Length: 431
Image (tube, rainbow, N blue to C red; front, side, top):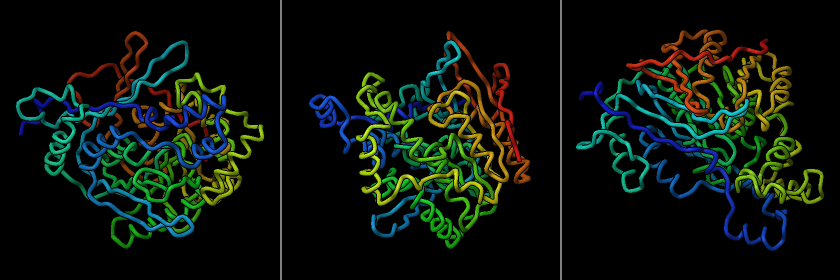
């Protein structure tokens, strides 16, 4: 099998474009009432719109071939159901992970991300995977992944990392992050929390019930002999706040990596709700969302808490971090309005062993997927906090053309190398 001459297999999508949306009934409601209903807003807080059917087809073809185990954990009453986790084993995947955005006058707008495998051979009779994201080809591509992955060199894991996804997303949205760590020797466990993905528990609980679920999941991994120390919690956005709330409990992790976390559920919901019109309809419906100080907003929060069986005022990672005994790496952006730098500084200030790294100029949707940008900080932190010698360097390249920026992490050395990128990521504070 000639891997060296193979064309890359590439897919690209914007995770957050699939994170939320309006149904036809919702549009009709907005048209008739002129405002967002309390019930609709409450559901967006604890039960955001599920991914589209095309996204599920994509997942079946691209993500599932990488998983070796599927764990189903029963969730106790009152919202009886299950949460689901999938395990990825460490191997020489050699991925190329790119983040794409447009930079203009100091601001950036995301164009999605891409994931390539240069050593994976193209399908028989085709020179490359140029038109990969077509429904009639997805099943064939998934079969090629299933044939290729067993041929890779697999390694004994150097540790275990549990990954929690962002708001409105599922565990498969973390595939690039999972491959980044699995390629570096980690056993990766991607988790669908309550209200996410394949979970059969319908509502998000903003960490209040998830923390006990994660403790029980860790115990299950231990019984199945799948938990190799050191082990970490890793979360992005919503999942990062959940990780911070779970970390003080038993079993205790050896470290936490929190990408763009939140400190207070009510505050981050208010920030997100203020932009909800922008999330669901390109910005022109933002005026329909009620003020966070209005009675309608308060009723929506109370309704959401009643649906999920929680009190949102109690979902505050800022109260939990002081009890975390393990080192914590906070990753964020100076331009993030959902997880603003001031909030990350407050979290780091209350965390006994904290390191904070902020990238310049990236909004929330780019920051949470920026594997190339955060690679140096993660590698350095793992070396300092866990005394791990990295098996691979951070080979990151940056290409700019007419305001379009493409940043790429190379799992293996590319043949032609653009100029090396200076990420500008430096620890802002550490303890």
